[in-house]
Image (tube, rainbow, N blue to C red; front, side, top):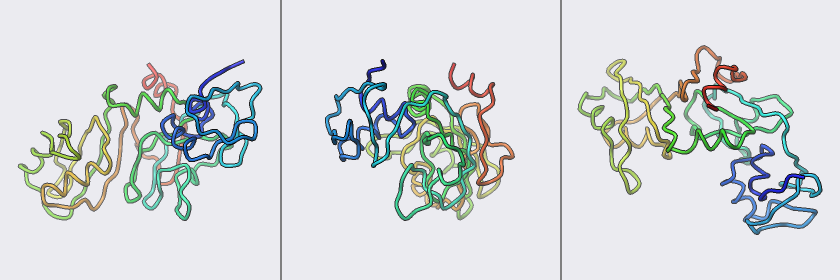
Length: 231
């Protein structure tokens, strides 16, 4: 018998993160033994209780999955988004996985997907200081002063962004390494210094690199990559 809170069950079953699970529960999308449950403190027995999400019966996953996807432009980083192409459409496996973090619809590059709730927490929470590296192209030449301002931190959404590492590639292209992931952060920082992002590609998360993985293709994490992320 494994008893746990309903939102944790959703996470362990690979449906979503715990936080997203709480939203689904509040929205009335989850049933336990055919009854809609909206109470976040509800506990379920994985061996006895029948849990349904959005009309489908779900169960705990016995084998953790860790996938690297090279997300193309035009796909939404979501498990469900009516009317839009989602990243799960690109992964042809029977197990349900969900993305860690987000890349906006117009961005491309490395996205990790998993059914392991603990890894989702480790890579999503800023306290673990995992680096995320991006290749950025902007609409017009960007000055050294503007890059220094971005690197030192800019006011955004009521606080200042954390310091970042930046390396110039050309007059309109640079690499940036962040240890946080605010909504559309790089695009907003570039706008604040008077330019606009025309191409944004994530090329690394922690020690996992995109490498030569083709756009739209995916692969499993190597054993070495799994150990480095889970240690």
